Image (cartoon, rainbow, N blue to C red):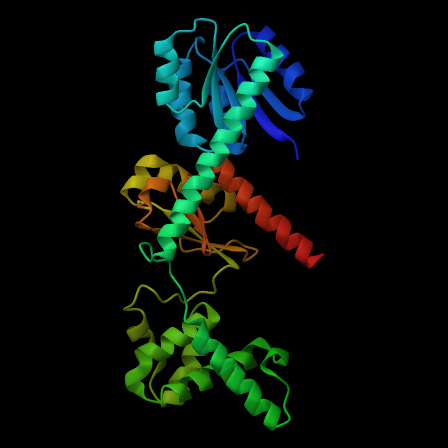
Length: 335
Ligand code: FES
């Protein structure tokens, strides 16, 4: 797939030569003479590389680089300038640029600078993700998990019983029938004891992903307590959801570090892309959205998770790409 590149420069001759040079290198290239337009383009599209001029009317190239670092932290930014100096190069790097190239440049010079910048950016991201992986493995960061083993053991026991009774397996049943079997098995596991209500609710919640009206009704009937009492007990715990979740669970971190790093922007981007607010599902039930206070990996801010996958240093464009990828995968599955 062609890499995407954005060039922001008020000089049309620089734009046309970049177009010529990088199209020949198989880049998909977008150009603009207006820095404001460049900054709004990165909100919708992820660019692997961005070339940005220093002196432009309106916004200063240094400020553009600072904003790009906030809105598109995964892009490899290279500053280009007709007024090179060591101080400016240092300042550009401090603000997030990966390289600094003096104009006029030869095709070889600029191609080399861009390719190396992309490679360094990718290597940086891999390191961050590996470090995050190491932290989760050492238990320094805990991600939400469900007690799969208990549920697997219960399903296996139900299947075994049904096999002995010459009945179809759990898999072959309708969703309401499966729910009934699981709820009864969970209640039996907890000795049909009302004192174990919260543990029972947790197991049923883990199985179904939420506590449906039907599940609460079944538990009420089996334990001989009112639905009202069950709902009252369950609603005391923020972990219980009462509405069916989407297939993918998206969580946007709005803890302090993420918020400062653009978590608020991310939340707005998700809301407008998926057309939902936290606590809701998309109409097609593909995503549900929530916000979390802190995932404990503030160095990766802003952070978004989709199921157990952590997306570090997110930008609206990267997020859009992740959502598109999920939809593509799902449409291939259903084809
Ligand atoms: S504030 Fe988001 S991970 Fe800490």
